[in-house]
Length: 339
Image 1 (spheres, rainbow, N blue to C red):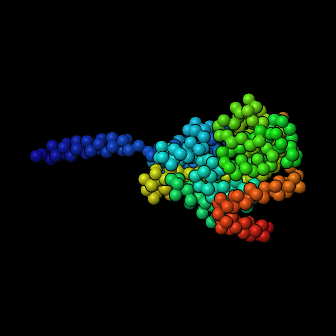
Image 2 (cartoon, rainbow, N blue to C red):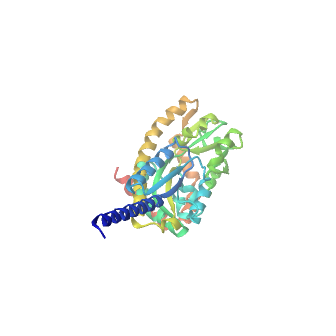
Image 3 (cartoon, one colour):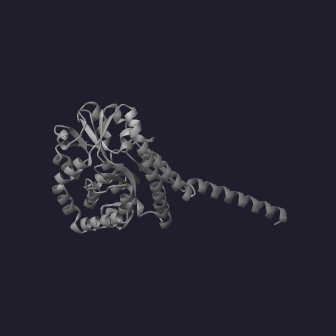
């Protein structure tokens, strides 16, 4: 075989191998991750979902691609949770309150007037207590990665300003599909109606319900000011969101892929908390400018509500377990002593 012929054969073989590897590389598609959430793309939830998607793309070198799907397009929280458990959807972020039926310890975060400020929330959620509750999800087919902030919840309605417990009498109030919220507001005198968030705006518009309770940011981004006249600043519950993954799907990932998602969840958590808190300070002014009549519940009335909720606290403690309840109360005492 001549030198020229050998050279031509080698070059042709290399070209064919190169073409084969190129075709193979094209066949290796990035891992697609559907990440569902309930609010719209312009909300704090939507902005943080984009930060999460970008962080995953960058850390994985484009090998993992997050498709963030908002506005409850994949269904309400409860439907997405079941899709994750069944392995039909990869990821979501949603309220811890809608997980109570799956992991009873999540009810701790629904305790009225449990958390007083953002500092307390961060220490509890990111510390041993938050980890203990988050890790319980794995027994039920979910993996919790990080807590985001929904915020302190406040009341709105279309009937009247709420200055006292008695003002809640006769108000049909939408609450999350969660027994703690249902029991709490029934105890305070409202006609509590459990309902998915995706149905809420329409229910307020048609007067199926008179009011609802959510953080400032959600009230603003969901345009509840269009169908609600009164807002009362109650800060009655600090409400977290949690980024969750299907355990069926998670267990198929490599350790490196799992680390990419965990790290991105923490990056998006830090962004989301700051973004949410910055927006919340502006939102109350924006809501006022949109025509809402805003009043603040007095400390004395908040204390009356706490006293009224004693039986609800006992039920929550029994549900989540007395050890966890006492551990949480002890941790709050420590946090408050450091002020």
